[in-house]
Amino acid sequence: MIEVHNLTKRYGGFVAVNHISFTARKGEIVGLLGPNGAGKTTTMRMLTGYLPPSEGSAKIAGYDIESDSMEARRNVGYMPERIPVYPDMTVHGYVKFWAELRGTPNAAARTDDILKRVQLYDRRSKLVRQLSKGMRQRLGLAQALVHNPAVIILDEPTIGIDPAQVIEVRETVRALGKDHTVLFSTHILSEAEQVCDRVLIINKGQIVAQGTPADLRAHMRGGSALYIEIIGANDEQIRTLIEKINGVQQMSKRGAGYVIDLKSGADVRAEISKRVSKAGYTLLEIRQERTTLEDVFLELTKSEEANRMGSPAGEST
Image (tube, rainbow, N blue to C red):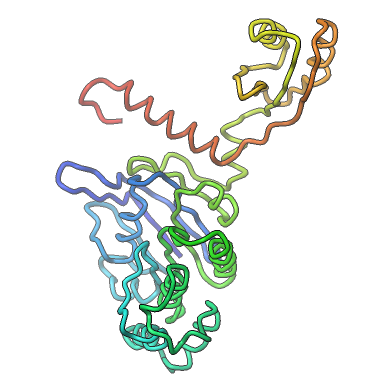
């Protein structure tokens, strides 16, 4: 449904999006994850026809965004971060207006159906100016869905709304994946992990990793990890005791305890317990440490920054 090849956007000498490539299949929810300024919104604007690419190509539902621009746009629904609204229109009138602009058959009936789907039907006669931020987010989603596009593109849809509304939006996005391909941008790591089938991590205009959240966690950790807390010993004594165990790659301080990275397949829990007891210390806690998407993101973006800093002056990485 979405095919992107070497898509690039330059503003003078600044490269906002740098030769990115990815695909999204029918019925898949793909998260575009990155910090503010990473290139997420620029990518989405190119895919929706708002911005022309400087290089590369992309297709929406098989239609090229440049040579078949109108057909590509007919097959995409876009909800930008800031919803463009006409405050003096009614909720029903606003969505019906978008339906008619897109040539949607039976625009009034279709509008009613979509307003029910996004839980705005009981507010259909209200003026847009009377809606809360969360209700306006639903309104933006309604205009993106009213023409029943194959692809839905959502730019930071949960920004600025309360926690209860965030949960509602996430549930709506998950439901959309049953009938549409969804590209969903966010800088909230837990959100991507909860909602998306697959994640693209973008940093400084480049995709630095992609895969399912589980695949990314497994790839970055390589082996597994443990969290331990020991009392009765100082930092040097604990490190001397643990770091010599076969299978331990490295250990780092976290709060009152330590995270121990292990080689693939290594299980050192019994050996740690044995050594701690023999040394006369107390093992307060030992548990498997689950790598989060946040760990993956921080490690990838930190590695990318280190690579850039390590390059000779003037050399591109």
